Image (cartoon, rainbow, N blue to C red; front, top):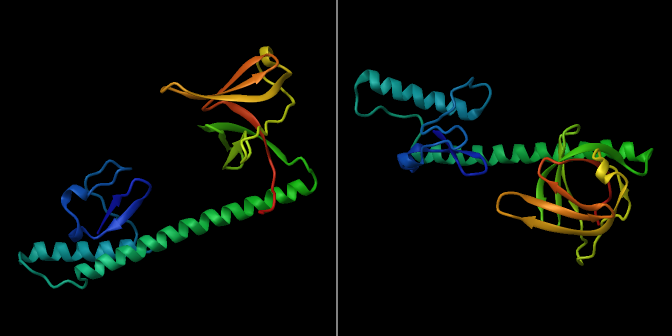
Length: 213
């Protein structure tokens, strides 16, 4: 029983169903990899311990065949079940985190209709906005500049900046997405010239909770 990589996350596989070229773990850069931690932690470890125990027994006895407590098809079904349960556990954890973040900010917002302000870091640049990471709360969120009809929703207000050049600059409500193959950026037009935002740019964001429509 091995752990292999399906680009986004590691999966458990039955070694008998794959060639050796598929025995790798992308994240660990390991050609062969399996769990061998405490079997009280994961059922996958229980299976690994059983299979390794049988392999060692076979090697010691110098026998060509030692009866196994698990067939290849059973290991395959176990891997499938573990992968499904592992994915469900991760989804439940993410949903739980989103729920309690929502309740937390909803409580804060009850006393402040403007929401909660926090320092954010631009995580990704999109053609229609930014993805911002807020380290203080461990969350990421999308900030859009156009609505679904393509109309600008950039607030036409003054912005503050640590750079005196842009202090009290007023955004015009227009922007331009640029990708020069080396770095993506969003260029805002303002009363004091163009303002460039790239990955890792620091900013102040307002976090608000709204009901789904």
